[in-house]
Structures are given as C-alpha cells and as structure tokens.
Length: 442
Image (tube, rainbow, N blue to C red; front, side, top):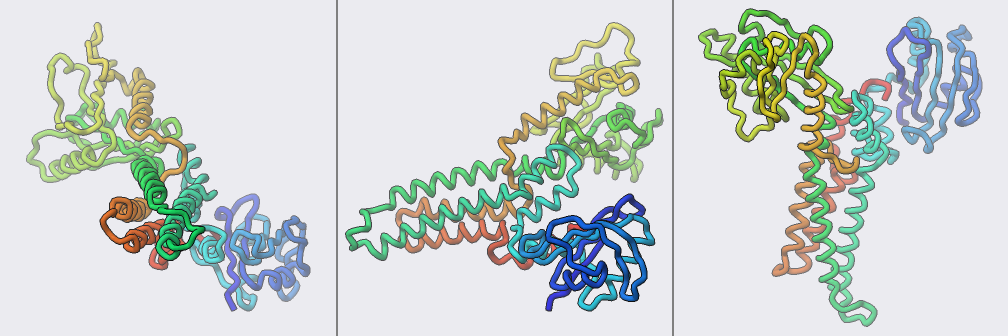
C-alpha cells in the first residue's frame, strides 16, 4: 500500500498559524487517531489533537478532503494549529510514529496530483512559477498556466491532428463506400496548414514567455566612473554596489531584481570598460562585455560633462537594443547639453530623469516583446517540442508527393510532441527535474 505523506505546508515557524498537510490512504486512520473522529468532508472543525498516549498536543481547525476530489486525488487533510516551533514539532513527531506515515519529499504532493490525473505537466510548471512569482505579470502568466491555459491549447491542437488522421485513414480504408465523401484531402491539409501557422505564431511568442518568467535583462555599460553603480543604487533604492571616485571599483557583475510596471527586470552593473594591464580588471571587463552580449537591453552610460566631446562610447552596440544615457546632470553647469531625442539625461543624486528612464525601459519591454494574450510557452522544453511538432506538421502538409500513410505518420509524430509537453506521452525522465523545484509541503 502507498505511504501516507505529511509535511508542514505553511511558512517556517514561528507564525500565527501552521498548516500541516496529510495525503494518502491512511488519512482517515490518522485523523481518527489524533482527533478521535472523522470530520465532515470540506467542513472546518475545531478539534483537540492528542498523541497515542492521550497527551494533549494542541487545539486547531481540521479539514478533510476525501479523494478523488482533492488536490492530490487521494484523501487529504489539513491540520491548522498554532504556529509555534514546539507545537509544530509535537504534531510532526506524533504523525511520524503512525504506521505507514512518512515525511513528504519536495514536490511530492504535486507529483501525486499529476500521477492521479489532477494536473498536467504544464499546470505543474505553472504552479511552480506561481509560487516564485515576484511581479504582477509573472503572477498572471503563471496562474493562467496553472489553471490549464496551455493544456487546453495543446489538447485542442492534438484533437485537430487526431481528427485529420482519422479522416485520411477513413478515406484510405473506405474509399469505395458510398457514405464516405469524395476526397477529403483538400480540407484536411488546408486545416493542417492553418494549424501549422498557429504553432508558428505561438512559437514566436516563446521569447516573451521566457522574458516574463525569467526577467528582462538590462546591462549597464560604460567607461569607469560613468555613473553605473550610482544608477544601480538609485533604481534599486538601496546601496547595492560600492560607489567611489576611484576608477575601476566595480570588478564583477552586480545584479538586482526590479519590478518595472509589473515586469521583472534584472539590472546588471558591470566593470568600466577601458584598456588595463590589471588581470583582475581585465576579467571584469570581459564579464562586462559578456553581460552586454546576453542582455535584452543595454544602457550605455556616459558622463554628461563630456557630451560636447562627441565620443561614440566604449562598446560596439551594433545589432543590440541600446539606449544612450547621459549621467551626472547635477554636475553640469547651465545651460544643459543638447542631446538627441533618443537619448536620456539624468542624475542619480537628485533623481532627475529617473522616471523617464523607467518609462523608456517599460516601452522597450513592450515594443520588443509584446505579449498578445496570456497563453505563452514559458520553458525551453515547451519550445523544443513545439519545434518538433511544427517540423512534423510541415512535413505532412508539404508532402503531396509521398504516400498518405506516411503523411499521417508525420501527423502522429506532431501529436506525440504535444503530448510530451503536457505529460501524456513518455516524460518519465522529466518528472524528477520538474518536481524537485518544489518546496516540501507542496
């Protein structure tokens, strides 16, 4: 018989309330042992918790969710007790002594929900992202995925592919029957071409989905003392990086996470780029250039006091989304320098121009990775299997010169690729990786 698992599902004590979750075939036995009765399903009951010897452990609310209509699909119970360390430890110790009971492993509740058909893999990943969401955009995307938005889309595509296969095979098997219409190929392959276009459009939004989930990466690039660390501190509203008049203070990439209009932004301060014989500084400069190469947006900082020098900056930005930012405007004597309308002028000391910079970042995110709707692929494996699906679909659509049986095999492969995203087909090797992302108790 399967073990009954238990774990603290709320935050670490001390806290006002601690929630201990139980799941498995022994839930009823555990409740009858600890509180002396089985509560009415889905009704909170105040109960006294005692160990096997009758010693009082705590008093709290108890809820019972009989399977299969529960989170895991098994019998589930929640013990809502006082959140003191001693209270939690006493109840955990009591449960561990029950026959067939053991502590849950990370992600085991969610894994059982998947195994019992309560969730598909995309919903599991959405739930994991929801737990880690830092911004409103991340929350919306993760919640939609956890509620089955991706699953519904991919299941619809798989159903359409299955229908196409069935129609082609019916034409092959029963072409002599009177109730089978003439050739259905034109309609079928036209529908599959339309589906391929939908998959192509969906794949094109993968970068936007990754940006929402992982963050929009911005690199601050410039010469030493261009104001990079000061700007990082000003935007973070705390002292993250060391600021000094001594050139070359920053030797490594310093990153902070910001919420800009509901979007996670990863802002990176980098070492000043210049010629140097110092080995450590050279490594810092190499990392600066690498950060710029991998960034979604580069802010190329220049000292506003040198605006009349008409220099071209310190890093080639060809082919890279970049904004020139003139810093230290508070040190510039009037009149203010004349800069291009595409460039920005600001002061990290007075805050002048920071709002314009944040608005520009928001605009760059929106224009570069515009999100149409909320159903977006969010992970590399989604993109990989969607690419396979599209490849097989196109092979079927464009295979006019090959036998129909082979074209339907391409369609079958496309449906299998979709099934691997949702977990319906051959994904055992992925399960350990996915569920290991969860904390104990989820």
